[in-house]
Amino acid sequence: MSAADQLLAQVRAQGAIPRHVAIIMDGNGRWARERMLPRPVGHRNGMKSVREVVEAAIEAGVEVLSLFAFSQENWQRPATEVSALMSLLEEYIQKEANELDQQGVRVIFLGDLDRLPARQRASVDGIMAQTTHNTKLVLNLFISYGARAELVRAARLIAEEVAAGRMSPAQVDEAAVTDRLFTAGCPDPDLLIRTSGEKRISNFLLWQLAYTELHISPVLWPDFGRAELYQAILDFQSRERRFGRVSA
Ligand code: FPP
Image (cartoon, rainbow, N blue to C red; front, side, top):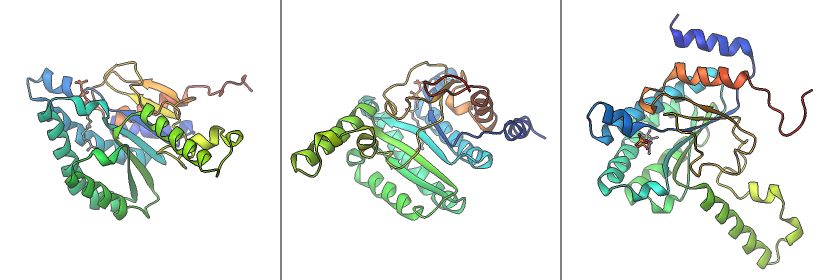
């Protein structure tokens, strides 16, 4: 039995599997720099981790996996890096679409997709349509995403409905906001993992993370795999979640 298999057995023995795991994949650049390689090589190796973690999540019985792949702020990186990331996105979809489909993964892209170049937009729309009926795992890929912009968008949608007389101000409650986020209909994350040791939320899922357990892993994303995911779940299982209430 490999070390990762042993950890999975432990995860299963301990019980509660988080329904929704979200990950801020960080450290690709540092991984490359440590090896004196260009940053895009780090991103390419990060793509392998995505593959491994998706498979590991399915094995563990996670229902939703949310990955922060590209933030709104990432558009401001040097043009060469942005274009390398866009090529990688396209390559990921071409290479993985059929296998993800066979594995029963429903792929959903969330964010300001209108900013994507036409090629990438077509690929993204294609894989979402291809996998829309799958139910084994929902894979949320956040691209061109920022949580504040997501909340502003929800506020604007509500304001439009109020202005049109379809909704009254008194009907604006938490559910009204939740229903207008990109993640509408999806349970909130139970566990948020951030790799590479950084202790920040970085404008990811600000609303949805209200009661989420945080796990900071020192491992750089290209080195993050099955064993690291299971370690994070074991850490999650050791927590007592109270949602602002007292212990039972
Ligand atoms: C953070 O590392 C990572 C990113 C900004 C890109 C994430 C992309 C991938 C994992 C590959 C593509 C995946 C898909 C699903 C298409 P960083 O560059 O901020 O690292 P650093 O902080 O060490 O510089």
